[in-house]
Amino acid sequence: MDLQQIDIIRQNMHFAHRFLPTATVHRSGGDVSPIASEPLHLDELAFVDATGRATTLSQALERTHTDAFLVMHRGKIVYEKYYSGMEPTLRHGLASVTKSFIGTLISIELFVGNLGANDRVDRYIPELADSAFGDATIQQLLDMQISCKYPIFFPEANYIDNQRNLLLTAIGTIPAKEGYTGPKTIHEYLASITKSQEHGSAFLYSNGPTEVLGWILGRVNDTSLAELLSQRIWSKLGTEEDAYFVVDSVGTEQACGGLHATLRDVARFAEMMRNDGLFNGYRIVPKAVIGDIQQGGRRDLLAASNRAKARPGYSYRNQWWITHNRFKAYEANGLYGQRIHIAPLAEMVIVQFSSYPGHSDETARLFSHGFEAIANHLN
Image (cartoon, rainbow, N blue to C red; front, top):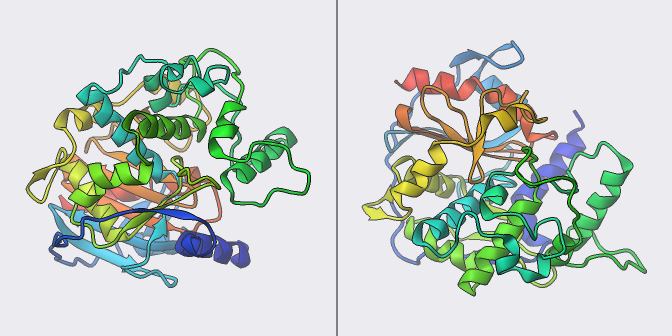
């Protein structure tokens, strides 16, 4: 692997706030919620990964260029490791793990009745009426059943590559070239996306639906996404540090992948989800919201998609990946190997931060048996 590429990824994951504009997700300012620790020696825990290779946990962490890794069992930290300059107080990029935070916020809005699952996007965002998203429902956005021409970050054709450059310019991660006349913000870019077929007919994972969900959250609540996440979740977890979003030139948060946070604070969020929305004695997320996520979505649509090989048997629901394994685990996954793995029946959560120079499907395959091996060992 190209070590220089890995170093660039790691710098972006660790220090985005130094070179990109951001919006703070404030912690409460109150006491930090304590997490007990009972360390176990899991380095030599053996399993066979999805490629058929025998490995140990420590070898798998090294192979995937992991920056930080934490396992909680029954509310206690049993394994916590930091590598390659990562520290407990350093906020790491979560990439598409961010989507699951957005999905959870939207699910709360559905539960309290501020939104309807079958409501069309153009009811809330008329600016998108003529785009691919205008006639889509909120549930179709949540479940990635939006058929549109939205770029991916690992292009397979020049068309996609050109669209990717437009996207990166719109979100502000690459500068606009002289004479550039394309979209200059996230919202402008969303309005330019066209529809490819009827929504609801296929699972098509992309960043567009989540960006639209973020826009809807801001519009319905008349506040920023960073402030909403702080109010509804982050300030209630007793987090140690503020989190932050990377934002575009007008301050719009990257809902699809712009969140950065510390390892233990993400573990607090995961543990809250494992406990059906309760944490530190407080109800943060309605139990019904988490139950809806856990039931999963249409496995047939995911099985017919290009994500099936890395996630056999999975479904996708409300911006979460559902394993349907014996521990009823569900996950948040992100580019370069970011992961939240929640296994309620194993009473376990795992958080992984990485700088792996490849698609998240690759690290998902490498760890697809590893998380279950840890759960088996702990139980």
